Length: 341
Image (cartoon, rainbow, N blue to C red; front, side, top):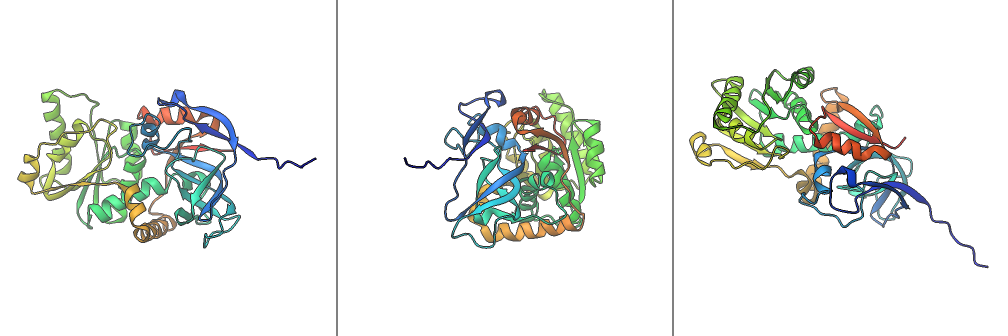
């Protein structure tokens, strides 16, 4: 009688059909097996991000083959290491950037996407760190060329990437104005270092409403205007904020939870400004050296207490759909995390 090797299985949240968070299912699947350039990570926490809400509805740039688990950033402990992976060993605590697959008890991470955690960093904060701070660091430093003394306007400043942009803007020496939709969000953004806060109304807006929105941003930024605008919201807020940009300012296109905006290009001519796209994930894939340098600077900021992820809600793996729904409803302040314990 031939002995059978029992295959280990794990729990995972899966998207098996196009749809919202309610379509996600919790199932047992075989443990993944690392290839020569991969690491097998026992996931302790998985950060929830806006791309997760888009991917399960097939509205994102990347469309993985189903079934798969959402979740693009994780923190955990290394269980196995591929033969060609250097600098990572079993037992290491690491942050992994995966794109998807993170809402599971175990996930495969490319060796070059494994980031050692600093000793003082807990797993929930670690899983809420790289995508948001990486995106905002790339946006402000590489794309926006933000300089000390400049004025930075951050739309959606209480969200994951927005709050990271507020903290990083201050760490880089800018005057930071956070734009948010409620007083409790304004209080959070001020607590994370914003010099000033503007509270904008919820859309949709008619012609008069759009004009008032633009005036709101202009008054907040002052006569000079915003040297850099970080737009993680889109919709009608984009054009309204662009009207408050400084001469030769830089408008950073980061995300569109309020819809994809149509910008009148005469505004860019009048202010001689730039509209700049920010696609952090594609940049990471093309520029491993730049990514490593960015991570090193971000970890230094963390150790010095200049940045710290604000984890506002934690959901168990079985409730991962609720975590994504919470984010999609734009209720989250800071970061939402799914934990495996």
